[in-house]
Length: 214
Image 1 (spheres, rainbow, N blue to C red):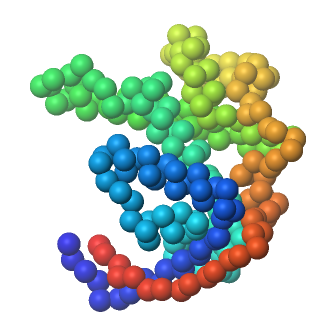
Image 2: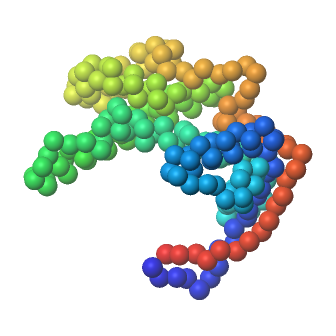
């Protein structure tokens, strides 16, 4: 690994969490350690009282209060890869030795992925603009999978026919795939759009520098 001479400034933000949550973390840590025949160290147990985030984005880009809100989006990213594996089976193949066949299969799956995500982006933005509602990526992938035969037939007839079919079934897609919101809480996208971050009683900001690697 070739090291750069420059240093990358990293902002570390630590949040003191409620003791009830910290105790649950300690119980979970002890349980996992016990299964491996170990005893958790004292500093590991003490660390359970904190949520620590590191970012190279400065405060003018992401305020400290918004760090945890932005971090919650990670689950949406994980859902994308989950859909690729559970619905598209992108990690599976029956090809054993034919490199060209394997490459063709992989490219076909990636092209399908691009098409589905472009459709998702179009419908999601439409819903957000009109109603401030969100489209579930997990439900959308499953909807595409359950209607794959019809979608394939329309796509073979041409891009315009495919787009017209999507527009005709748009209402049904939205009703089937919209994300259910709890009135008592904001979603991560709502919080980011309205700049609603976390306000906790104890907050510590520490600026450190870490080496950047290629």
